[in-house]
Length: 522
Image (cartoon, rainbow, N blue to C red; front, side):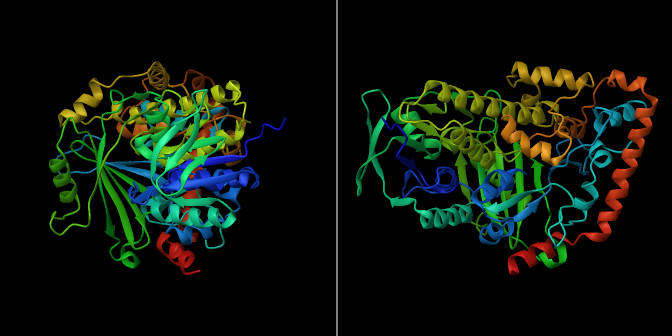
């Protein structure tokens, strides 16, 4: 008997719904009837969105869409790093910054170059920060230079910024053109099947919609996974305190004069942090804060003050309250939750879009038939759990390691956050001078890791860039580095090569503004 899945209903539009619809249509070669039900009355979350580097190879390349094509449709811009501003304790009136670049740190005789930097730093032989010492990108980012030439040759690894609403519209147009059935309608109730799964959803205008498989992209409501199937949401607000945001879109100013920054900024505030996402003609920004330490009015005031605005004349403000954590199981019976209905972390390292396409990728990898083999479901759920918890721990490391203690928010982050055994172990490894991450050595290894093993996107320099950037330096040198004088000499040559390569690129690369202008003009 043929038990293959014949029909899928996706509940919810937005970025998650249309990414799922387009990816599944391609992955299943149009052999499954896919219907997406989208409510007109529910607002979408998102102003400007930041991403991570494997978006193109894992998602858009899979769809067969070239980079510049979707960038033109979605007001895409380039992102080579996250720039952290004022996360360290600074002199009064002063500012500090450090970067988390996307570049791969070179290895020297089996140890990342960051470990040789630690040795030099602890022995007083360098005062240069770890990011500027080990990554060639930083002076290029400071000059607002593009991450690639006009011909497309990459100078450094990058991700993207885009308008999330435009991405959803673009993917909707593509998916509907390919054959996805799109219904604008509200769901009245969910009809359960005899085995406890979902038999159908009942809509106001379209009636009963049956399917073999249901995808819940209904956002924080969790309409199918949480409300209908009663799957518990594991609250993790004791791991990360931020639970609210106020966001808006700003004009881009004179970008021909000032340029467009090829990075996301994360600006530390009294009770959280503000993102800044530059795009052509506009800037997406929002203040992520912890409501237990400040009120919505106070947070809004601090946010507007940062941008020199008054509430009466400010652009439209979007107030958001989010839940921090994940479902106990992302996949239950014949229902898979993707996007905000599955899990959410504050977007400090741009995990939102990543969580969506990582989950879709895993769903295709573990795609079921109508028997819904529990082995496939359990494997999917373990992978999503690992992805989320590892990412949560990395975000938490930012707050645990900052020197800031000027408000109750920052003091609580240093002393009151619940820590997993995993992050305790990683921080202990870091303090001992040991490698913390997967030792990716080149881009091919990095991209292939998504297929070979379910791996998040943190590179071998991520923890070192963040923790050392915060001022937390390992207490010890990796012991074996003291036994190889030839390795130390090779490392010095690599440090020199970082500087040499930077100097070469400074003379060759166009400005980020000029490259984006040419892309969008085409």
